[in-house]
Image (tube, rainbow, N blue to C red; front, side, top):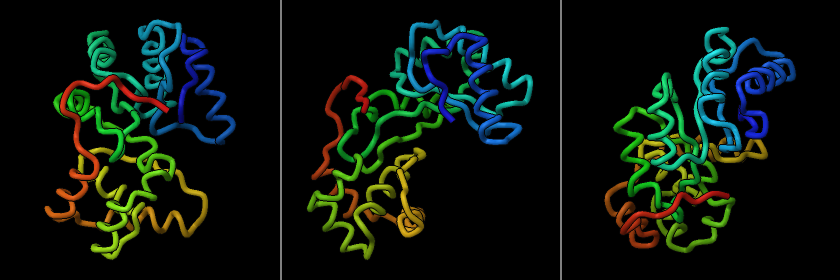
Length: 200
């Protein structure tokens, strides 16, 4: 569940979560995210997350779209190092986070959660990805997702039907051999220097 940035002060964070719990008819959320940084200081949102954890209304909290500077700022705050996730745009065609954010999060024990892991479907039209998929007896979507997972990140692909969910699930079982990874690196080169955090 994502937390809207417009109400990301302490009381607003708690009230928004309680509203989500009512709508979901749930007692607790496993993960609650600040979706965007807004006008409220991170201290305010963090205080709300702390209140929610102490009340056992959320199990973990995280953020979205924070770059390294934002994560450093967050983790310097009291309790800020308890964040479990940074959700960012990451896929074969958007690899800028590999330069600094991904290594930073690994070192800090923060899971990177990739949103739009198949670039809203646009990656599926790239022939190089299709060629790797055919060689592995998989679909392009499965290979794109398997690649994201192979980077040690989580992925949240959109799914609209039971068949699509089954296809997505199949990505977990795909092993990408060295030659497949090399072909994907050739088609989608890793960053050669710092890149501003991309968003959709």
